[in-house]
Image (cartoon, rainbow, N blue to C red; front, side, top):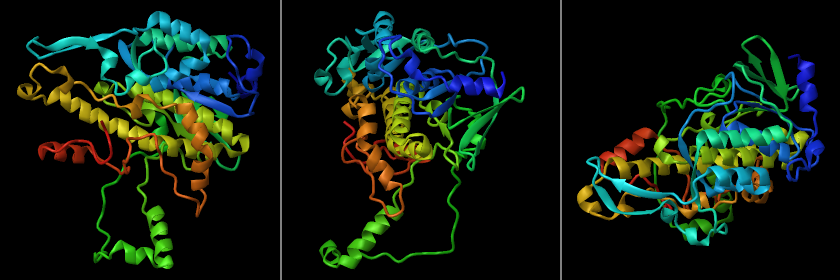
Length: 416
């Protein structure tokens, strides 16, 4: 495939198939999106980008569509994707399990308590507006993946299989990101979405390894002053506001230096298999970046990428951390305390996880988040995380230490 062929396909306007599948697509934004990886996250990104008016090309290293995987869980925040696609919604209703029941057993086979509806563990589930669709549903991964492929086909977008990407790059002066495939072909777009999994080649462009802290040769003396004295002095109030911004914990960065390549799904944030949240968060990523690009427009693609990172990083970190907490309920079970009460080993399915309107959150917070990126701009605080939580970095070593000390994995805030 030549570069001109690629450009021609990217130039196809989604307006051409506005009514092909009952989907309301926005007018063309002129933004070209190159998606690398045709897994759940990559396909969802392509689909949402088409709906938002962006032009899409998707490359996949496998020779054909994936049929691997078993059952997986999709939360309500991810299932909101289907509300905009009648065809996909019908297909999902036909292939998913809406009325799943669960039971917990010891390793001996002894059952703990009664069998119960899977969705019962979701806090506030009775308030969910979709009475026929519980907050948590399960689906066979091959059928869910096929459903996404079918939607792309109805949009007229073909996945290019057998395209093994060996390098990611970007050109800030020309305002493009790009990839080089194994056969030497180059593909470029306004933004490249790396949805190619845990071992994404984009990591050469987007370093993800956090170095250990090193001694600086400096020290500090600590002291305390009553807060009312400080607040009475305007100069100190301004200084403290600046310090709060300067020392705010830095979230993980999933984009390249020039913000033309963005990692998504497992390429950005892998989840424990027992978390039951990896696919949902990949879909949330897809919804968010498509919405951010729509707000930004072609001239502000890099701002959209940075806002996406800001809106997503705290939430993903919390979801990953909760995955560890839920895993402990399975793996370090005190059966004497559990008795016959399965609720004591149920994973926590808090409303802050499943109840989020992802697109609404992106739409409602884009401007504020973008303003916070400007030097001297207001501090932005996410509200898509546990109430009262102050986000801060955490490590696996910290989790292991807290476990040894018998402390809860969760940090501050309401994780119930």
